[in-house]
Image (cartoon, rainbow, N blue to C red; front, side, top):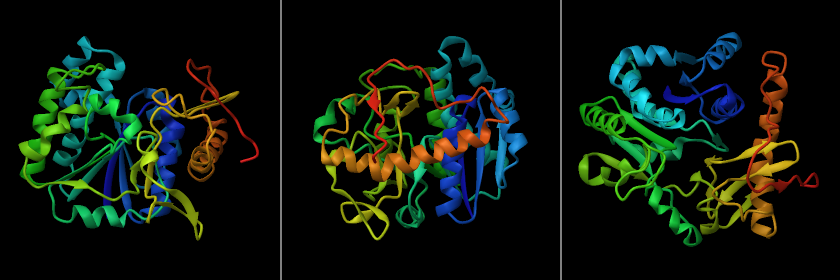
Length: 311
C-alpha cells in the first residue's frame, strides 16, 4: 500500500481528480488524503465518495494547529495554502500509525507510467525530495528554489518528523509569495535539507517531475505507446501554471514563450498536454451536474496559446 496526500479547493477540483485518476491507473493499491480548502470542495468529494480517498476539512486541520490558524491573519489566501503544506503530512502521520511512508503531491501532477522506479530510489530513506532541474534557458527561476514542492516523501520515523516540524515552524514564521535570498513561500526552505537533515535522498529519475522549466533538457518522444524522457519513461508531469479556457490554453504564466512553434513544443503538447486536457474535459463534463459552477473555461490574463484541433 502506498500513501499520498494533497490539497486543493473547488477551483482545482478537476485537476485534483485528474491526479487521482492517474494514480488509479498507474499506482496499484494506494490511499489518498485530501485537505479540502473550501467547503464546496469537501461537499463535492464527499458526494462523489471515491474509494480510498480520505477527506480533511480545512477547519479540522486548523483546530489541530492553532499556530497555523493564527498565521491565516497575516498572509494572503494563497500564501496561507503554502503554509499548510508541511502541516498536512505532519498531521496525517501523527493520526495514522499504519502509514510507513507518506508522499505529498501537488494537485496539478499527472502520472503517465508506473511509480515503482521512484520508490526504488527512495528505498529506506527517511525523506525524498526532487530538483527542478532547470534547463539552461530557465536558470533565472533558481531564485524560487533548487527543489520543487511537487513530490515530497516522509517516512514515519523521527528524522522525517523532525524535518516536518522544522519546516512547519519556518512556514508559520514566514511563508510569502515573494523570493528572498534564502526563502520563497514554502519551497526555498528545502534548499539546505541535504545538509540540515540526515537520510535525505534526491530523486534522480529523469521522468519524474518533468515540467515546462526543464523540458528543454531532454529528448521527448513516443515509443511503444509510452512517452519517453531521453531513455527513461515519463512517470509524471507537473502542470504548474497550466490554464485551459474558452479560446485556447495558457501553458504557464512563467513560460509565455511556449507557443507550439517548434517541433519539440508540438511533441510535448501532443504527447503530454493533450491527454491531460482530455482528462480534465471528461472530468468537468462528469462534474457538470454536480457542480454547475465549475468549468475549465475561464477568462485569464496572460499569453494565450491557440487551441490546435489538429493535434
